[in-house]
Image 1 (cartoon, rainbow, N blue to C red):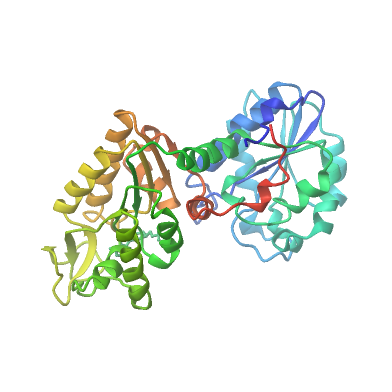
Image 2: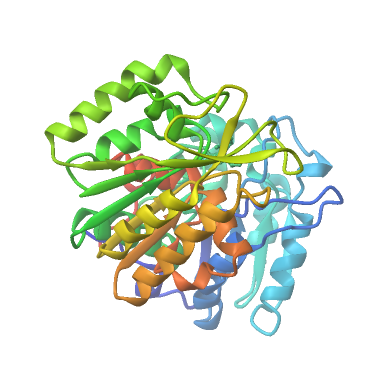
Length: 402
Ligand code: AMP
């Protein structure tokens, strides 16, 4: 089943409420450090404006506590970036409060080609609570609802679920970004071409265990790197020095290794490690093959592991990647992540479908200048992981079927 998309909706003379994910990282001075999430929703906004509609767009930003306006979480910088990105496309881009006392009249006065950006939805306590009353107050602003906020679609915040429900029987559609994310993370993975290789990394095993477990039996092999590999190595009785481990998950990790064996899913763990005495770049370093000595911590996969992982990735027709192989923010411990990134790019060039998800994986690809070379880079961290866990999102239920 696929969802109806914005281009399938007649928008001429209509006001479209677009729930976007403009939860962008900001510098200390409030400027936006990475605008990828804003850029990713421009095609949806543009599609409405170019066909004679107007747009009311809203998002959350950061974690305000729902106690009204907090200047550090204002959408001001987002409004400015939207103005720049929509120059020559939108008539005006105006920033308004979410509340009906201001927004209702502004939405009513909106003309074709104009954009009204609402302030941070989480300024209102009803948003996080998924409050139906809050949603009912916003529902009259527009003639149709469009979900383009993949990054928030695993949450049942009011603007994600109660709002489209309150707007029914008005049309509810998916934006281009949401529909692309669902295509790559849902359909592609459900019907993945084999061999199917999953690459999981990052700091916390606990975050990724449900996804890892769900993929056993579905993928041919799972490459595990990053700090999470050390909990698995410990489960195999291999010494890991002072590397980061989650001791309470060692038994669980053992169980997962057994399960994988019984379902013929290969789990590849790093065979060598780029280690340091302390968690910093300018300290004594050493490469350990197999066991890591006491007093050393693994901060990246070693060169042998990078080769082993790359040759597994080279065989793949489908690759899903979530999480770095090491502390990629701190060279030289970025080498393993970069080697895997290049292997994934090479696989893409050879015709594999490659999907990268999670903020750190996207950041690593961005740093390497390789983002555009994979089939898809997901804008959603938590949401993309939950899709890999096989979860169904309630927020997608109100979206009309095509
Ligand atoms: P996550 O949010 O779980 O995807 O983890 C991403 C973080 O894991 C990044 O900030 C990496 O620096 C960190 N990381 C990756 N490998 C290691 C490691 N071996 N030791 C400590 N942190 C790591």
